[in-house]
Length: 425
Image 1 (cartoon, rainbow, N blue to C red):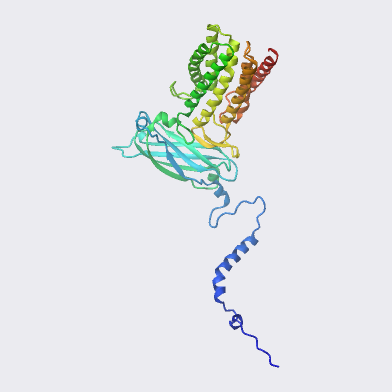
Image 2: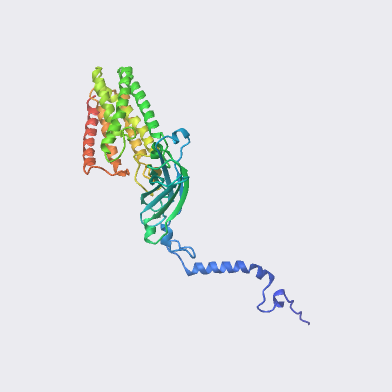
């Protein structure tokens, strides 16, 4: 019986150590997979390990402290008539991303500029150098916008540059990031208020809307409570005008260190409330209106107006909250630093709106009282809420014990007002 010889395959015919066409085609992929497997087995990261630095790059600490975005934008305005008015200045904004890891730090930016197309020798106002600092910069807070202004300069076209570095980057030897841009000077009052995240004219527009809503609501409640709505509306309109004067005067008296005049000075809600309420009380007394009932129908109107006006604070870049890296933070600006912040303006608006709603329900259901119980109850509650929110604002307190004193006083008035609302009727 004969035995069949086994058929030789392609592999058996190939000499030892030789490579087939298929093996040669797969070889690059095999080498890549093999190197990837060796890399995975050589280092097994544990929970909390930081990502390794890229090949040929500095150590990871320098990666965390480097400025990720290098962008410089110049303040502009669409209306040429306003833009070309005197005096002239420049607004510059440098954008950067906060480090993703590491401790809190500071971002320091140095802006420099020189005027172009200079005829003759360059003067002192043909160059500038401005330094700004953003902080605290928290890891993971995202985009940061640092705005600086050069005001005492010659009008015209300018070439500008910026150098920025985090403090942590300087300690590790990180080189400053640079950016450049070119722009033309514009009207100084516009330069002072324009910044990323700030809407020009939003604050006065929202305050005016709040005043209209408040006066209208007051007139409706006055008519329901048997008060002369037309007379009270006329008193309230005059009171709003005097309230604006009180807001400017209050802000000026509490910010004596700022160099500004009456036209450019800011305004304060406390000053507006004091001025307007004084005018309403005096006007009601002169026209023989019951002051207690007038105050009660004014309370919800005043609080709803404040709730709307606080939204203007957010859009206008005032009363900004502290920096935060929380997911609940909202990107906003204080006209100098744009970053993720605690939305304290929204919180203030919510407090005013809630108390205004409670006061409105009390006036509609129980009627205005002759002693102004609803007014004292609602306003004391709002003052108490504002004192709670003050530490969340990006503004240092000017007194050591003023906040604690106001907390106790407003709490006492709030309890007294609540007792009057419950017992007087």
